[in-house]
Image (cartoon, rainbow, N blue to C red; front, side):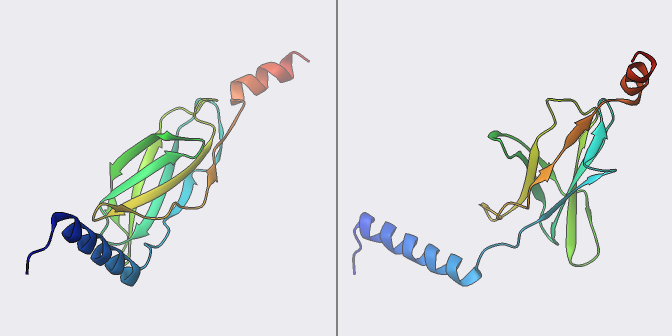
Length: 135
């Protein structure tokens, strides 16, 4: 039996769709911020993404600009069932105040995105002191 290249491609695509349907979608990762998602300007924050164990690459995405993302390797397993990746923002600013989400990858397929995390930047403690001293 000879298969024409187009027929072979169709068969491969059909099998791929069948396998994906059997596996279902990947579970959504979770996202959080340490120490908090409301941070004074100039202070550091770490965005933490958690997903199932065994995944090595996570992506942090700017929800408002999908071309703005950063990939990193998972930093540590959290027991036998969970893995996390940590994304440090050394000094938050108005430019980093946005909505973030994360994903992880398995065999060239990205998971569904996490829920959205809004990073809010407030006035620094020095700015607050200056405003209070000069009403």
